[in-house]
Image (cartoon, rainbow, N blue to C red; front, side, top):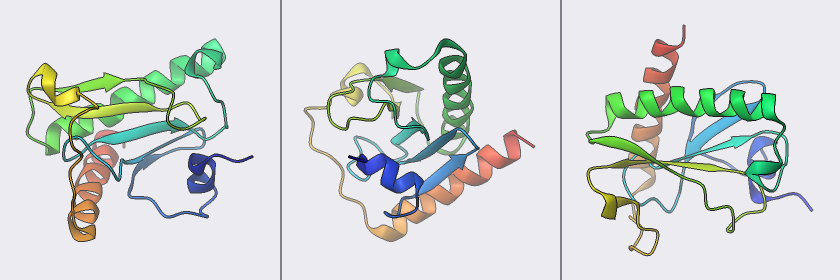
Length: 135
């Protein structure tokens, strides 16, 4: 059965996309811990991040790094935190979360509720920065 992320890759479910290439996709988490909280996935449906072949895993991390650098430039934060939990959706995904302290990456915290217009604005800002950085 296809995961919700595979459905996003196929365009069956909309997403606030911030970066994409032939192997990976980055889009805003719709239940964010912080503005700019982004999920990075391989387009290939692989359940567990450590089941990804080494070469693809390296490319995946480089892609995530480029997305994180774009986030840092448009979302005020000390760092972009990285989390891989892997239990919520059976499709490997990396959380990139703008943080100012360690408590900002606590998944037990209440999630932000943002209007669609704000998601669109944030996604557009990150996407433009990503594109500018990776010409």
